[in-house]
Image (cartoon, rainbow, N blue to C red):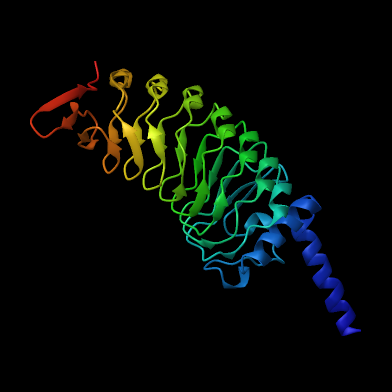
Length: 273
């Protein structure tokens, strides 16, 4: 009799914890917990407690809207069930030990505005399916083991303000279609294996503040049209195969982008008005 009462009590506590959250979202969170070794997280979950008390989880109107689990010792892979968290606006799992590929199921998160999976061990290509995340403002996939080209579909994310995919093994060119990302403020592909010329179309990204292209195999010159980038305060293009050697510039009001040659020095002004 006592065991029966304990079982019923446990069931009621668990039901209360999940009562207002859709079953598909509850199952998705538990799948995440199980597939990333949740018992060994730095801050783990009491799965018998209400979901809105779980570490890193934000609930609004009975929907999970944020998952913030950086620096939390997540080990393993992201489950496909994560695509069932359709209310998510932010997913931050940076600085962990996640492996495997970036799941295509993330493309189902139509409300997502921030996707941060940096400083993990993801492999494979950046899924082209991420181009479906039309509300996305920040995409941070840097410092993983990603390979392949930048998907053209990412150039359709016209709300992007940050596209940070440096320190991977990416190849190919910067798509000329990048000119469509009119709201882009920060763009980094530094420390990859990319090649081709720096597209002049990037000069149309007039909101750009940070441009990090160093340590690749880019060729040609920095387009002179970059003088139109009046908000640019950081530019790094060193350690490439450019026709000239450029000094990296960083600061609130950089006076010039200097071009160092063997016998002369020229300058490409990017001063603000």
